[in-house]
Length: 332
Ligand code: ACO
Image (cartoon, rainbow, N blue to C red; front, side, top):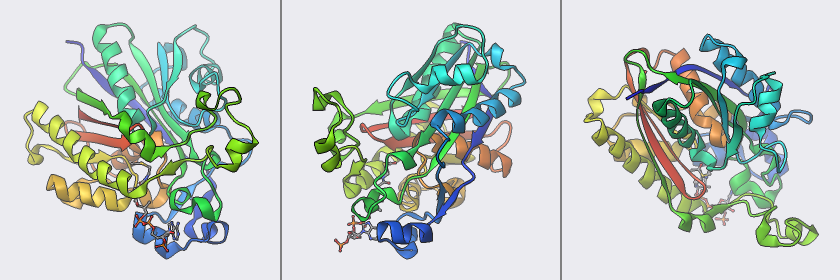
């Protein structure tokens, strides 16, 4: 079997830091509330003129350089995002153009919210395993600051999110480093608890109009407690599946990189999995929840901090809108 490996990885976040104190006046919230409930101290928000593809581009360039290839060696681009530059096309083709890729490679987006990066990994891994492509660029990138409700009405959700992008190049594995397994799941019953409904064909014929906006259907809404309950059940479950699939015990795992939704979610997951917090990578305090980007950003930072290195086993896990959830086991 041709296994795949992550040959290069990169991330990018906007320079503009938005602290909890910055949100206090805007959303009638407090630094204390946000830190206690979520562990978030600050997040990055783009400023006017930076679309999702502009933010993602440096992450892609870093991943391509780290893989030791050029942009024209890329055979396919797949992006996970819920905040594309436009309704269509997706940012896959826009990144193809911004990377100055002259070949007519496939380039497209998928929508799997916070689980998107692991969904991408499974797709990329399958394409490499089948021999269809040699170099695949996978990008998790979201500009959540352009869809959240920044008024006091939206504070329970708005304070949690930030903007960021992460990218990896997947290639055929030649040595021990490889993606060992991926497991993806969904349960559409979760839609009612976590969604941003408009613009959408459900509102036919307009998709978006003044009434839809007045009803705030264009903002993300969540039933925070339901989301919390499901996240702390599904992520540990999916980690357990990954460990059983690979015949691993907790001692075999160097680091768990979970979707950075909320510190309390990560803490509860760690308790349920029976692992200490030093085996859970945490950077939510700096970036908030960057949706599709949390995992590749966390992987980059954990690697740079020496939290794992060549030969180590790591597990990724995510939970988000859909509901969707997933895990991946990787030998670095
Ligand atoms: N600032 C100040 N007060 C607030 C804020 C805020 N930003 N938001 C809500 N409140 C108030 C509420 O109005 C309420 O006040 P009341 O008691 O006077 O009515 C009080 O705080 C408690 O509100 P709850 O919603 O009950 O707060 P809870 O303790 O459930 O925490 C939270 C809310 C943080 C959203 C929690 O439910 C949670 O972490 N859920 C998971 C959500 C998540 O991570 N979503 C991300 C997307 S999905 C994913 O990535 C997995």
